[in-house]
Length: 255
Ligand code: PEP
Image (cartoon, rainbow, N blue to C red; front, side):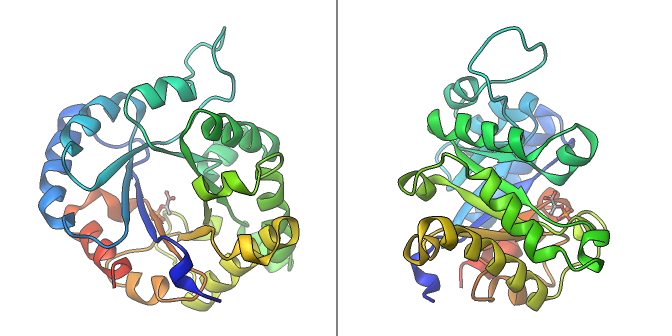
C-alpha cells in the first residue's frame, strides 16, 4: 500500500445552506485560512450559490463543486441541471449518490451510475457516495453492500476515467448525527471500497483511487481519520459551514 500514490481531497458539502451573499462572505473568510493547503480543497454548494462561489474562489486554491447532476444531457426534465451547465458555470466536482438523495429523493444505484457517467463525460469529477445504514451494519452486510454499491456506481467507467473519480465512504448512521465512525471502522469501510475497485480494475488501479471518509468528521477527529492508510481525505457536511473548523480539517489532510 502506498498512500502517496493518491491525492487527498477535502470536500465540503454545504447541503441546503447559505444564500449567494452568505456564500461570498464564507468563502472570503475561508480563503486566507486555506491558502497553502497541501491537498485538494473543494466546496460543494447549492446550485443557486455556484456563480457566487466561483467568483469568490477566483485566484484561490478552492475548487467549486455541485451537490447533484442530472444524467441526461438536456430535455424535458423540469428543475434539473445538466453536467454541461455545471461545467460552463465553472464547477469541477459534483457529489453523486449522497445518502440524503438516496433516502429522500429516490436515488438508486442505477441513477448514481448514470449521473457519474454524465459527470465524467462532461469533464466533471464525481464524488460518489456509498455507505451502509445502521441496520445493514448490524446485520453484517457492510462489506457486501459497500462492494455492491461501489461496483454498481462504476459500471461502464473505464480504468482511465477512474483518475477523475472520488469515492466517499459515508456510513449513513454517521452523517449529520455527531456519531463518527472510529478511525478503524472508517479505514475498513474505505478498504472494502478499494477492494471492490481492485476486483474489477486490478490492485494497481485501485491503489491510485482517492477514497474519502465522510460522517461527522470535524476539527477534533480529522487528524486520526485522515491518518488511516485507506482514508484519502474527507467529505464534510456540518463542519464545512464554519471557516475555522474546515481549515483545521484541511490542515490535518495536508500533513
Ligand atoms: C455529508 O453531508 O456528506 C456529511 C458527511 O455530513 P456531516 O459531516 O455533517 O456528517
